[in-house]
Image (cartoon, rainbow over all chains, first blue to last red; front, top):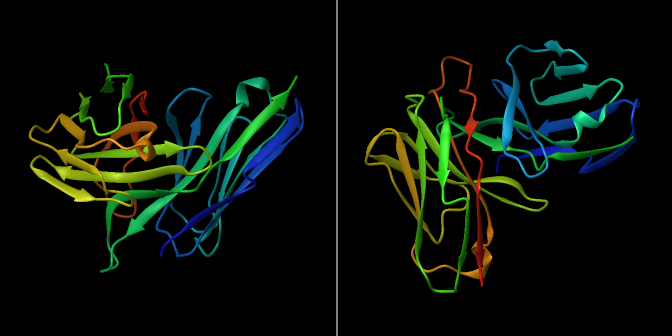
Length: 116
Length: 116
């Protein structure tokens, strides 16, 4: 079945180091979304990418969507303690007929810890 | 603006007991979802609804029932709770897909359920 895989599962960095999480889909996606969940909190939407090869930046965060629209990455430059949390990617879940009803299939997330 | 509100936030049940989790959203979203989150498993879709009066099964629907009698409310029921249903439950809502865009999910704060 359709899968969205994320690596690594955990990442421990020293404050100021960079961080990258990778997302791979078993199917071509029309778009991909990224969410952040702080410890004890709920997932919060960060961004949606829709174009092949798209790159978007939000301050220290850089999001990329692969040329084949099957993979994506989130890169954080110079991590801060406020970046702590779990980062999820999510893509549309496609029904048997090939269409999407708007459901998202989530990766298992990458848990980032930052040592001050 | 409250967004997505879940009640209760915490609940402890004994095996075999029943309960209902309530989700309410004030954003006039068509779509609503129930996810469960377990350590290392990411977010798994239980049931979803694409509009008032409609519901559909997600990835892990067994042991749960849902109802969407009003557009703003989505109820998740456990008829006979089992320890395997110990989890954090998140409700979310979104707009329907628009072209290649999938609606971003707005999550509630979560409901932590323990089944003894």
